[in-house]
Amino acid sequence: MDLNGFAAMDMDAENLGPCLTSFVDDGTVESHRYFLARRTVLEMLKDRGFAIPNSEIESTLEEFREKFGQKPDIERLRISSMHRNDLSNKVLVIFCGPNAVKVNVIRSILTQIMNKESLSRLLLIIQKPMTAPAMKAVELLPFKVEIFQITDLLVNITKHVLKPKHELLNNEEKEKLLKKYNLEEKQVRP
Image (tube, rainbow, N blue to C red; front, side, top):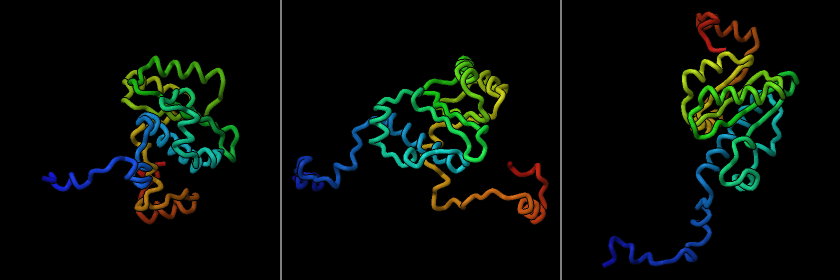
């Protein structure tokens, strides 16, 4: 009996050819997640006007794994960049790793960066929720801090076909839009 046709499919991996074996990823899930999240962050920074080389964004998963390995060291994943039009506007991206982010992690990050760089913005990429004391410590930092879950960065939502293009409005366009929808400035996001 052929058990629903499976006996007829008696072939080994060599007979499958490159069409199926090319879809098999031999690397770790961890490296793939970091690759996707890092690429999305790089695209986001470039969209925000920071100096990010296209070669960084366009690198492949294989190139990422050659550079960072199968189990990437989160220290090496850091991204530091300056804004193209305002060199005093610096951003630093830190991947926090698989553990919950506690206040001691925030203190450690702060001591590492305060001595080296004057930042305008810090992006923290976390995998588990931050503790309440850590969130309070973040609020006290002297620069803008944005926190992203790594799972939110696996896909660049701004590149989705159903997502409308977002454009920065000048003051005149902004006033026109507020008037059209009878809104006050405090009712809309910056």
